[in-house]
Image 1 (cartoon, rainbow, N blue to C red):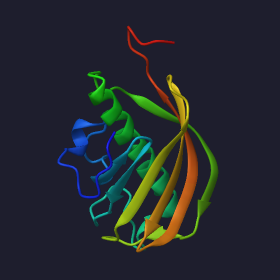
Image 2 (tube, rainbow, N blue to C red; image 1 turned 60 degrees about the vertical axis):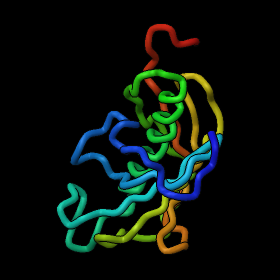
Image 3 (cartoon, helix red, strand yellow; image 1 turned 135 degrees about the vertical axis):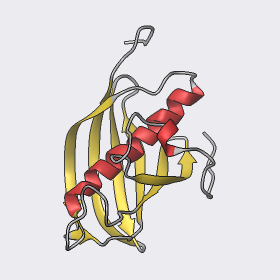
Length: 150
């Protein structure tokens, strides 16, 4: 896939099986052959919002949704339907902030590390204002459909 630096003219909702209020990714910023850059922010009515912001561990779901956006783009390119996937493991998670402020913009990078079947791994990094806020390697499983190669 070709890389673009500006916001992609695609509705995030069309790339993943999530539905409101569980869609945390606001927009797709960049696509490369092996990953995506997405943006997310939390409003005060977010299901995860607390008085002191949003807990840092919620960023793992943001990372998983960025992976879902990448997989959704791949499936769209291959004329395959959007399908369910699962976060099955998190390795080397590091959190550099305790929480995220309401309205703060998170930049999430998800890069495909290995796997081309139903199991895959993605290295993810989240920054806020140019500073690293969290990183992790996510292991995911995409539910196969009839006709998929095993």
